[in-house]
Amino acid sequence: EADDKAFASDEDLESRLAIICGTSTCHMASSCADVFVAGVWGPYYSAMFDGLFLTEGGQSAAGKLLDFLIETHAAFQELQERARQLGVPPSAALNAHLASLASAASVPLPLLAAKVHLTPDFAGNRSPLGDPQMRGSIVGLS
Image (cartoon, rainbow, N blue to C red; front, side, top):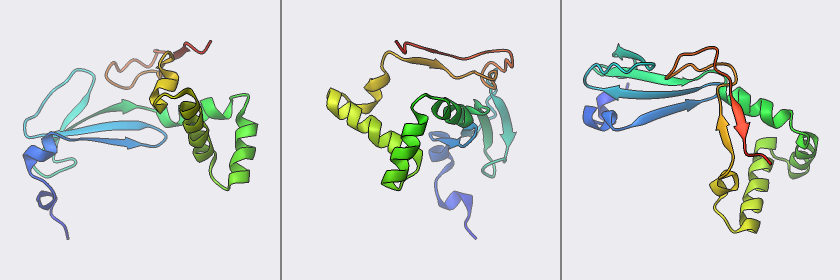
């Protein structure tokens, strides 16, 4: 059975951020001291590593929001057909298409959306604001 300490020192663990993504996102940080941050959950003692405090923040349904945006896009059926032809999941076909767009534009992939701004709080904000009434937006599509 592995010991938590066998992988890194407490100091190493304090300088790392764990990001867990699925239907929601969660950012988790450990510290030797109990750090209180407004809008961030915790600190919780020994919740992730023995003897360390855990703080965490994230957004509920963030991954599901991406699914919704892709699946309701007018080109989704075309994407599904392309994915079927390639024998890959739609996300892989979309990533390949984005890479080819970036290559054709001679820009790094992240710059394809340099003028698009997304506020992902479509179903409220979990942290750091903890405001269930917040609403998201996408600006710069045209």
